[in-house]
Image (tube, rainbow, N blue to C red):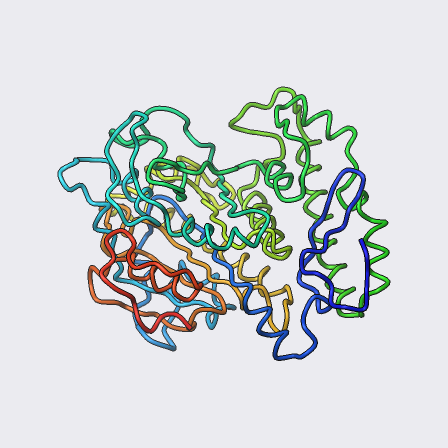
Length: 446
């Protein structure tokens, strides 16, 4: 690494014997004038998705009032500290996820159409067919300037073969991201593997190799510390603070992953419970979100999706008093007890969205924060889960690129793809149409 009096290259990395480490955006990387510095930071726009499965308890999600000053619903209550940073949108539809003569399979269709806006082909075989997803259209453009085009993360083990919903291939429920109409992108569910995809390691991920690495590996930070100390001496106080916070975050995640790995018999771990996955849902979710945030902070990628669960997920949540499986609860049949439990699950999921907003708002970048330069789409691809409703979806749009603090009710059956196109416009990715789009959705994006 060579340090000069000129601005640091934005691609400056720390090098060690066994690792390299990308850096967050430092003041020393920006042009001299404050106006130019602000423009440079704002140019780092990001797009992220946090997806919740099995629809929503809409009676407890949808705010009663529209516009500003609305009352947050019970499910949205965890987002209260950030209400000026997000907008709730209701009335959007994915009509392409309806049967259209194909019979059952709403979960497979809704997940496959969420970011594509197309009616996916009903098949259990290899002849799957969807469309290019919106996140991958953004990733294709943004990936030209980042190390990783996009991160696809999940928290439920993918089903690898056969049908996951009434004649629909598991490919449709395993992921949101499609790089082509026939190419779904697999999610990564193991935090260790996500960490290594961001910061590097060898390509062996079997249990024995992971155990051997655990016994011999030094911290990523230990490996690059000499280079980091050289750089730190040439930075101003604000940049040194940013570096310390960034490296503390990396160290914290390393320790959390290593603690999980040391807590069990790695050699006996199977795919459903790979090394490094916490037993607690909330610990797991927050570890995955922290990895998302680190990748954004280092500008390794600007596009990512996190599936808190996949469609027809049967996860239970005993930590909040819900021992029942999620998917059966989503078909509550208007049973008050089941509806209350489903509301608890939906609220827990919103707590993870709130955690993401918290983490992104805590990290300074340029004259703002990471959240100021991010657009987050959160919600589900079904509305009323009991009815498999595709026509009033629970949508949250958050970040500094959004006009926040509102509940916006759009005309009934407005294609969700109209919103996705408008989001792409703001992200600087031009696309004439997406799936069943009929135009743009005005007044939502900042």
